[in-house]
Image 1 (cartoon, rainbow, N blue to C red):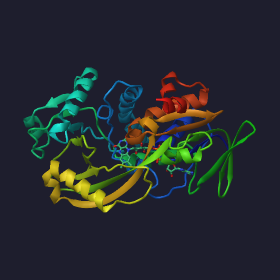
Image 2: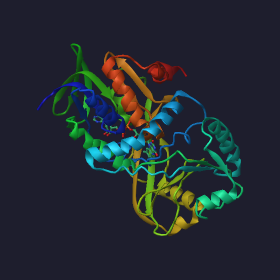
Image 3: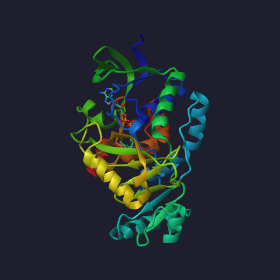
Image 4: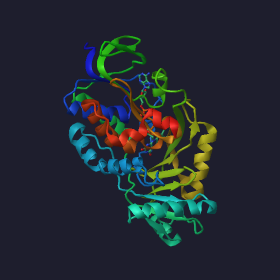
Length: 371
Ligand SMILES: Cc1cc2nc3c(=O)[nH]c(=O)nc-3n(C[C@H](O)[C@H](O)[C@H](O)COP(=O)(O)OP(=O)(O)OC[C@H]3O[C@@H](n4cnc5c(N)ncnc54)[C@H](O)[C@@H]3O)c2cc1C
């Protein structure tokens, strides 16, 4: 087995795989290493919302990245379909943001003012329009709601799986069930140590999600990256006709999926790396979802799962070169699916050319620590 590569990527989540795909396009010999522990990841567990507007309240660099990345999904769906014959279920469902209580009305109004400056398609909904758009499932006459038509969605599980299948097509070496234990400097490059084997490469990318900080503890201050556990439920309701994602200001959401299914998410537990759905988490999700859409009380639970989101200190992603040709790309928290196509492209350009994109200055470790 070959143990020498141009680039080794640690982590086969959407971030690592998107970078690998782009690098292989440029002709690099790439290997991607993952330990594959069930539940100890984010990408397969995500809701799949492409919330480039919903997630932002100011015109920061990440907002611009998010909008650019969102636009890449339609062509990406076509490209993955023709490459690996897998449909990532890009659905033009749009998103309705709703205040959790009257107290939160000003939050939605303020965000609307900001978003409307950048996207005139965003609109405030009257109680009647909210009822119409949700097929009379949501009746909240006193709560402010806005429609964001561009915030569509994919099936995150299928998207992650499609990227994985595309690795093989592109002759990217996948080294599975291998936990990286250390990354040591060796000559001009690095030795990447797993229990079974040592791999060598001039360039290494750590895209290990919430565990990236542990792998790079020599370079990253403690708590620079933490895990935020999230739990979700997938339910089925054969007659509910809800076609738009609903997102409440308290973080609860209902995403309509294919085949009369609805994904209800998500809890957030900081610095929690445990696997599985807790009773209290499940209760909270059920209570919240049925308080907005009472009809969901008659749905059937199909599946439930959890995942660990990578959270960068101050809520910012970390995309930096921590040593010569040793990169870290993590901390995309609730937006890693959304951002993955653009981050894959930009990081591959940086890794190949050695020139850091100016727009990435905002995501360096030093800057994140200072703010
Ligand atoms: C419940 C939930 C809902 C979400 N909803 C959305 C959403 O709607 N929209 C959106 O855009 N984002 C969403 N996210 C966030 C998104 O899933 C993440 O930001 C994104 O998946 C992070 O990708 P990643 O590749 O950085 O990390 P991961 O997917 O966690 O991948 C990291 C990989 O690194 C591997 N690894 C770690 N350490 C090692 C090691 N030492 N050796 C070998 N392998 C290692 C892990 O096994 C893992 O496979 C959600 C997340 C959760 C949990």
